[in-house]
Image 1 (cartoon, rainbow, N blue to C red):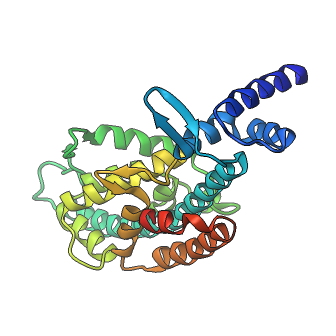
Image 2: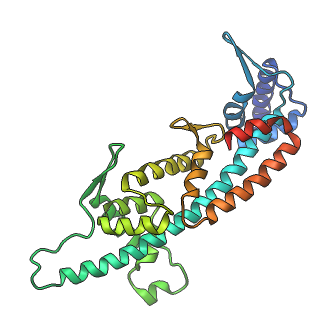
Image 3: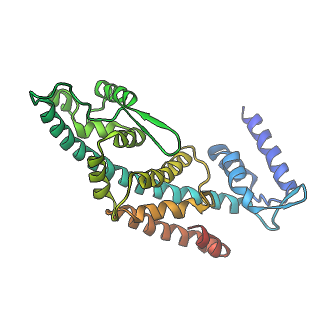
Amino acid sequence: MEKNIDFLSDMRIDFLKDLGLIISDPKSFAKITQVYGYHEIINQYGERFLLKKDNDLKYKPGTTFEAIYAYYRLDQQLKNQMMISLQLFEQNFKVALTEADTLGELRHGIKNRNPKTKDRRQFLSEKYGLTNGRVIHRGDIKARIRHIKQNYLEPYPDYRQAHGEVDQWVLFKEMSFGVATNYFFLMPAKYQKLILARIFQNKMTLRQFENWLGTIRYFQRRAAHNYRLIDVKDKGEYLYQTVLGNLKELKNQEPYDLVKAKWTKIVEQYLQEHPADKAFLKKLL
């Protein structure tokens, strides 16, 4: 097996050298690409260093594997810090969702106990159509809630024994971010407005939130599959810049401030070894 891996690595080294890439330490190249992926590094990040003339591809003169790997690591570090900040936003969103839902369910329950009420009304709408054409169905959310109630993790020892059925805060904690936002879109309008007003500095309509959320989800999908994020555009804008701008719209500025501070240190450290990239990174970030 080891001989086969070494043979594959040697083939790749020969191929890249033919394209003009400088690989000064073949053993280091083999180790890094075996751990983090040849295609992950070379195919995703090497493109920036290629010169394309007619049908001929060559790396820019002086390009090293170390430079491509450093660019890959830069993106990984930027992505990881952004994901931490997005997790903080997600926590904030679920807290607002939990409290609005608890209030809504209480009021809804009181109305349904009214003797004059003939038919029990559903708290959630039957469906909601997003601008991208996707339709969220109440039945799908209800099925997910039933699954969570049967399979949730205890947040602390003896929780299940003390509470019996899962309560609202654990229910929303157990939801994926996608399920939680789908739940939000099915809530009555007044509770949606309550949640948006709590989260954002300025007024945000439901359709505006869809667009705002669409960028966040696109970022998270790319990050989850470890696709390149740096120098990637969404709707004509650099994705990192758009997501950072989205965070700046939140009332809770900790996610924005945290990623901004961390990014500054990461970029400064990168530029110590690659000062020529200063203008390039300023454009992207």
